Image 1 (spheres, rainbow, N blue to C red):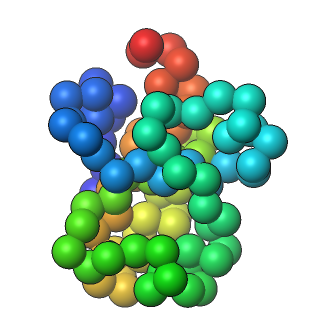
Image 2 (image 1 turned 90 degrees about the vertical axis):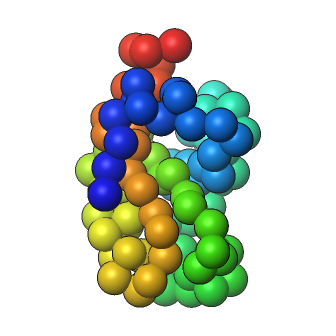
Length: 93
């Protein structure tokens, strides 16, 4: 499942995960996003995610986060990719 940045901007108080490298996250990120390592999320989602919550995930352009969201959905988590990633955010805010 995916949302456009326009759809994402309409969501109240979303749980947002930025999977970019920490230095990119520290430079700037979507407000409220937490920075988590994609491989740790993929291998140990129970450490970071709750089955009862919905998470919106993004990377720089949206491709890595799309793959991660697909893997996590197979594991039963409600993870939605933000199409276009951080670059879409920059272009639309």
